[in-house]
Amino acid sequence: MNNRLTKAMYAAAIAAISLGSCSKSENPDPNPNPPGGDDTRWITLTAAIPDEAGTAGNGGTLAYAISPENAANASYEVRIYDEGKGFSLKSQRTARVQASADGKYLYNIQYTGADGGVFNKYQVSGEGKYIEVGEELNTAVILGTSPRWTKAAEGKGVGVSFVNAKDSYTGESPNYKYQHPKGEIRIANIDLDDPAIRNTGNIAVDLGEELEGQGYHVWRADVPVLNQAQDKLFIGVGIRRHDLTKTAPVAGRNGSLSWPTTEERDLGTITYVVDYPSLRNPKIITSTVAQTDNLSYRTMTQYLGTDGHLYQAATSMGSGHQILRISKSTNDYDNSYNFDLNAALGIDDAGIRAFRYIKDGIGVVLYTRGSVDGGYIALVDLNNKTATKLTTEYESDEDLADTFGQYQNIGAEGDFAYVPITPSGKDGSIYVINWKTKEINKGAKLVASTGAHYIGAY
Image (cartoon, rainbow, N blue to C red; front, side, top):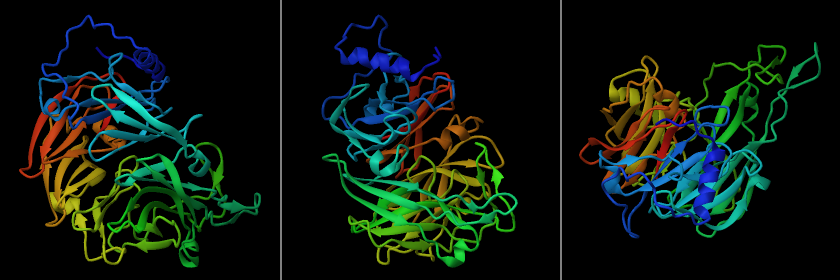
């Protein structure tokens, strides 16, 4: 049954559980396999629910943990939306979730609202059993209430936020003049093992007189990651370009004025680099291979490879199709390297929506296409620059593009990757990929709810 759900309903259910209610369900368990023991390597699934207005995926996040055996079992059903099943992670809107490599802990920074910017850590105990551990940590004083953040390395979180941009114009009609918005990037080092902010930093954005004179400006910072030596932090940025042929600002969607922008761009992908953990000495590195932003949307797009290089999906909300490399020896772009998903698949319209580096140059990519509806999976070999499309039952569903647009994480453990796929409001499945043999199998059934969809596995 598809239920119309709100965060308030889930909060009430979770409160009942926390007060010790343990009445036996009147309905038999539809799953044939019991959960694993205390040594189980739990796989946490996350799903976004609608807000009170019914906006799909905008009302909070549920978590539910299953064993690898159940994840691979097509007869197993996950009913994360049923009352008392999924655990409601704290966040007014979709939570931004990270996890420890062993799956024992989830980390979350709440997104927007009165508690936006508050960090929470949860111990994973299977099914809907998540225990909050440690004290809440308020990062909003540094990062604001809507920070971007990642697990930049095991045990080390980093939050970033682009703030304090100036208006893009001065004066009044008809005497408007353009001014560069500048702005700054704030950074916070977060200890995930013993939650605390260990250091903060600030980058005064400066693209240089030439680029700023052409209207290029930063509008967002995201996806921080550490290099192998853990002495450099790499921060993705979004770049836009104001149209300096125009003579006046225009009203945006919210009615505020800003200088018009142009899609014309001849600037390569940009990443900011700072020393770690001091967060000092900012430097800009620029790719000559790609011209797409390095910021994605809600998914991680930069990973430390087994070979010590960083691999970065140059994608901005699904508009890019390349994976770049940052050299471990120079901490700069290796412009001799370019993985092109279009070339590897023999198509010309791919847009990367999520990327997960697994091991030994192998990764999984979720992508959409400009010419056809749907959402697709590819296993990529970054060493040999090849890709294998993996077929799923749902790949042609027109709703998958929106679902993939909110995707946060592809799970990986041992030889397997775990990819929950559900078009919004429809049943779906966990797909289990053996990245060594390139086999893909449909696992546990994911039972649907109106306006909800799965957004990750950990």
